[in-house]
Length: 96
Image 1 (cartoon, rainbow, N blue to C red):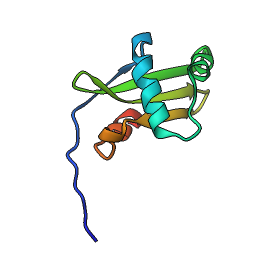
Image 2: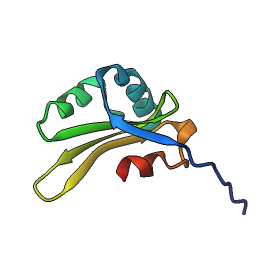
Image 3: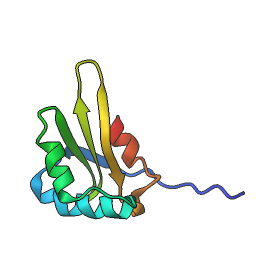
């Protein structure tokens, strides 16, 4: 069995803004067979307790995460990482 080591990326996490949505939608569509559409994202983000973050490597969006804040917990509702950026710590950085 061959072990493949990948270089961890220098990931910057920030709040999602509207101009990020085309890249987020591309990642969503590349990640899931039953992907959310733009309306699904809009409806989720209209909820008062829903937050969204993106992960950047350089100036490119490498991943995203939507989560809901509840009284005593945080619930991840959607997370995705660009296929070219997987296994580089992007998802872990979003969750951390």
